[in-house]
Amino acid sequence: MVPTTTSQASAASRSKRHFAAFTLTELMIAIAVIVVLAGILLPVLVNAHRKGRLIRLAADLQAVESALEVYHSEFGDYPRLQPPQHPPQNATYGLYSPSTGAATLGKALLGPYGDGLQPNSIVADPADPPAYQASIPYHPGDCVSYSGGFTYVCLAETAAGEAFTQWKWADFDPRDGADGLGFRPTKTIDLNGDGTPDVAGGKVWGPILQPELLKMQGSNVLDHEGHPILYFPTRPGKHNLSDKNPALGVYCDGNDLSYIDAYNNIEFFRHADASPAEPSALLPPMALARIRMMVGDVDLSGYITNTPTSGLKLVEKPIDKPFILWSSGLDGFYGPITRDLQNVVPGPISSQANLDIVRAQLRTATM
Image (tube, rainbow, N blue to C red; front, top):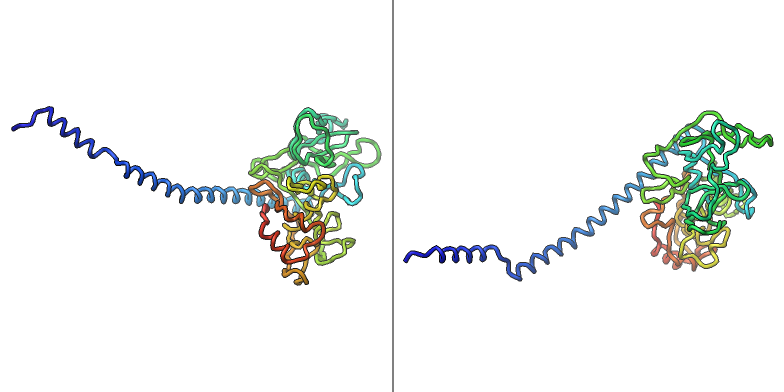
């Protein structure tokens, strides 16, 4: 018997359905394989992305470090923080305006603001920098003039309608002697006739750091995560970093006699996990502890411990460099954010148990 055309088509259709279809078991196996592969590959991809971001941050710091070396070769020193324009709230601030390390870095390497003068004139320009307006928000690095013509740099985010809050602003003069990028390093023009030059003149230098390498917010140089790069110039000369006498200058403290002056960027180390009293403190104990911990003073004493002490089994290693560049890393926090620091400050860590707790929960946010 010869099969009919209809029976042949029916047989072919059954054959196609047999080879094209998947059973429920086969589908479940395929899905399980995909899930397993995703579970293996996803952490690898996430880790690779994280490493790429860290490499980018390291490159940011390297670019700034190279620019600082160029600055040193040109001027014989690294940028130094400027003195306050008016007496500080507390004499312990010392010679330099506190929390202006990041702004000093941007002013010295790029000079983003103007000369403070009207065009083709030696008449002061009240819009350089612009006047503070409570109706607009400000970001760290933004500079304004406020209260009697004094100028300030923003240290923390402010909201529109927020009153001028003292601890969110630092006494800082962003005027660098040249309109646009670049700067004049020496003041030669006596603007107010008091016999002291207060406006820079002469040759325009820079920018020393190529502006296409990193973004800026006001006077702050930002890393690729969008956070300010902090700058701590260490005290010039040779010092006994094991000295316990603050009057002679310890390793890390809140004064200009210290090898590392925590006041250079202290406000950036106030965290949300601070005790209620910390925001009003001139030298917040937890903020100081964070800086000390990260620069090698792990027992928070302020000086370097060269030999194991009675309560601790450690020999500390100081940072012996002309400056420190500090990135907030990937989490956006400067220094460790553990709340356990509240149990050991103010004052040094005196027991190995407390030190082990802090070390175990320490989240390193610097590079």
